Length: 92
Image 1 (cartoon, rainbow, N blue to C red):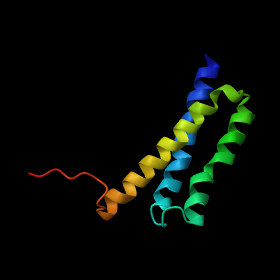
Image 2 (spheres, rainbow, N blue to C red):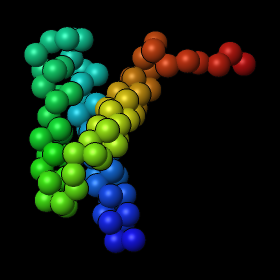
Image 3 (cartoon, one colour):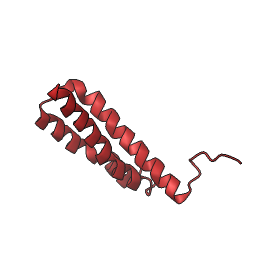
Image 4 (cartoon, rainbow, N blue to C red):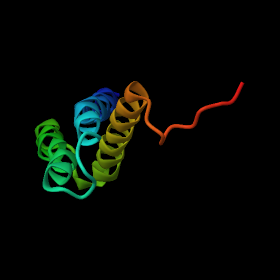
């Protein structure tokens, strides 16, 4: 039971850490150096947290999925705030 809570906390932290990186990533040209840096920046921290929590490599897909979801949410929020064309707008 305690491992379940620890895993849930790790996944939430991976998600929350990736949101600012996804937000900032939207400000840079796609495939530029900084774009790649911001995509990969949270990964070492998530790996470190996973190792400190004592989880094996079997949960890497879960933490990676949480980090990707955080990147997507951060990018979506940035596009929405600046009124980007990548978001769908409903006609009245």
